[in-house]
Image (cartoon, helix red, strand yellow):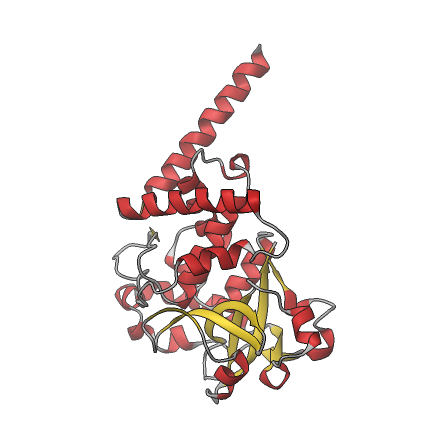
Amino acid sequence: MRTKHFLAAMMLCMACVAAMAQSKAQYQTKDSVTITKLVNEGKQYLKNKKKTDAPITLFFARKLLNLPYVAHTLDKNKKEQLVVNIREMDCTTLVENVLALSMASMKQNARTGYASPFGDFIYYLRLLRYENGKVDYTTRNHYFTGWIENSVKSNLMTDVTSGQKAREIVTRQKVTVDYMSNHPSAYAMLKAHPEWLPKIRKMEQHLSSLSCPYIPKSKVGNTDRLREVVKDGDVLAIVTDKQGLDIAHLGFAVWKNDGLHMLHASSLKKRVIEDGITLRKYLENHKSHLGIRVIRMV
C-alpha cells in the first residue's frame, strides 16, 4: 500500500514538473494546436509506414514546406524563454522543430514526463536547443558544433561523420568560434546583457578546442559511398571557413536520381524549400562552404 502511494506521489510530482516547464514556454494557441495535430499524424504515419516510405524527419519537413523564412525568432524577448513557433522559421529552428516533432511521435510519454503530444514536443525541443535542457541564454546552443555535441551527449542524435562508414571520405575542421564575443552588438539580448559575455567566451573556448570531421564538398557527389553514408532525412550542417563561425547553414538530406539535395529554410527564397539544385552545386556556389557534417536522429 505504501509503495502504491509512493508511486502515485511520484507521478503527481512528474506531472507538476512537466506543467511548470510547459508554462515557461512561449507560444501561441495556434502553435500548440498545430503541433498536437502534427504529432498525432506522425504517430499514425509511423504505424502504417512501409520500408520504402520516407523517414519520419522528411515526413515532417515536407509538412513545413513553403512556410516563411524568418530570422531571429528566438531573440525578441528581454528574458530567455523557450520559444515555440511553428509558423515561421530559419534553418536552425526548422531543424529543431522537425526533430522535436519526430521524437515526440516516436517516444513514449513516460520518458518525457508529459501526458500530451504538445508536452512531448516541448520536452524534446528544450533538450535540443539548450545544454542539458536548461533554458538560459548562455546555455542555448548558439553554435551548431555545440548543438551537435550536446545532442549526442543527450543520446538524441548521432554524428554520422564520426562513424566507420564515413572514415575514408572525411577530413577535419579545427573549430575556431568567437563571432558572438567579438560582435555582441549583433545580438540584441547579449547587447542588453554584457554580463553574459564571460560565459559566452567560455563556451566558445571549449568549442574552439575541438577538431571535427566533415565531408569536403569535393566528395559530395552522386556516388555509392556517399549514398551509403548519408540517408534521407539526415541533418546536413554546412561547414564554413568564415572567421569566427563553424557552420553556415542547415537542412535535411533528400536523395534524388541526380544526387543529394537539401530541404531547408532558404533566406534567398524566403521560405522552406526542397531545393531543385544538387547539394554539390549549392556548395560550389558558395566559396566559403567547405563541406558537410551529417547528423542522424537516434
